[in-house]
Image 1: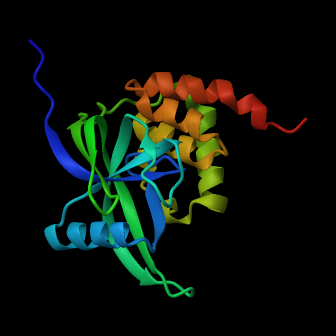
Image 2: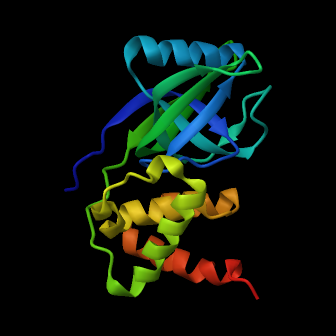
Length: 200
């Protein structure tokens, strides 16, 4: 009998973007409900859930989130030039939303089932080109990854998540890649997507 996955209740932050495990996401906070979310997470040291918006918008009425998201932990704060609060977060475990409820202030909370981390898989030689592409993308678009150890590029899970977040993919495509549980299957899907970005 399979072991039951752990579940927790977390505040949810539906966004028009996908956060991948290990990824970095910077957010501008101005709605009262999300200022409360930041205060709660800071006070308790807890995470909140980031889910892609399937229907609705980031502001106003609660949006309908995707069923699979990623825990985000706040790693830094900054005061932005526009006077708003900025936070930097790092992606943690993925989760599946079991049920949601909306607080009176419009903050969405979800009971979520945490997914186990993917098992480490060596990048097979047929995906070596993807390692080179990620290296180049990081040089131009992902400066926070520039000091990643070389061993990271040999980890199929890390490589796939970095490529999925750095390529200009539609949110629905990123969501499909997030929901895959086999890192080699994710690399194969990304390899098949690449010709779209090759110059004629």
